[in-house]
Length: 138
Image (cartoon, rainbow, N blue to C red; front, side, top):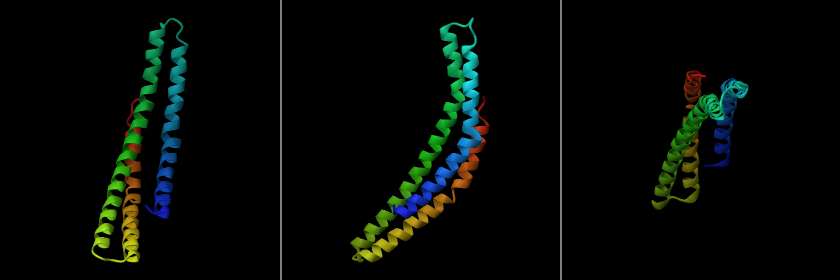
């Protein structure tokens, strides 16, 4: 993918991840650490009980991180498939005898279209992630 297109996608995705981190993940981390500290304060519990308690405190955050990772992987896979389609179109054009400038132009327009389409998916993906993060039981 051309550097400018890649930088554009990266910037939009980073902005989304930072928003999720500051609005949701960070709060979950705080709850996890406070919950874990409370587990450690239970002096009458056995070591196993304390470890189980701490693990239970970590589960919501682990679930949240898994959700975000999974959604980002799906997004990346879709974008990759789109750009692979562009590569195939460019190869077909080149094989049909087109000159390199025409092939490069097609490739740039095609990848640009992939990027536009996928950048436009970010708001709905963000909304879906926020709803899913809000539904995780603490």
